[in-house]
Image (tube, rainbow, N blue to C red; front, side):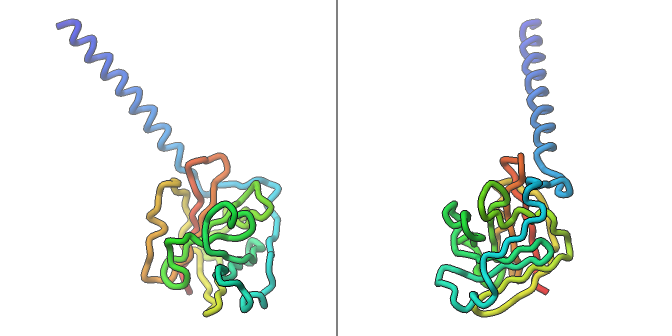
Length: 185
C-alpha cells in the first residue's frame, strides 16, 4: 500500500510540474501588442516600389497597391505568399478574397531588402489604409491589432464586410504573427 501511495504521489508531482510549466510558457507566448518591436534599422524607413500610374499597367498576377501613409508604405501586391513573391512584393494569401470580403496580405518585416511590413507594428486603431486595384480604390480603418499564433487561421476567414487583414512575423517570437485588421470606411 505504501508503494502505491509513493508511485501515485510521484506521478501527481510530475503532472503538476508539467502543468505549471505549460501554463507559464503558454501565458508568456502571447505577446503584448504594445511591446511588439521590429529591428531599429527599419523604424523610419519608407518603401515605395511603384508610382500611382502603374496600377493601370499591372500584370495579371498583380492585384493592386497597398498604401499606408502613416508608415510611409506604398507597394505592389502580387498574388501568392511564397518566399519568392515576398522577397519583392506584398503577397496575397491565395485562398482568401481578392477584392470583396476579407482580403489577406502578408509581407516580411525584417531581414529582406523589401521588408514592407517593417513598420506595421506602429499602426494604431483608427489609422487609414488604402487598397487600390484595377476596379476601385478603397479606404479602410484599422480596427483590430493583435498577436496570433502561426497556426491561427481564423483571421483568414471570409467576411461579409470588406476587410483587409495584414500579417507579418514578430521579432523573437517564432510561433507568433502580428495581425492588423482594417474595415472599409
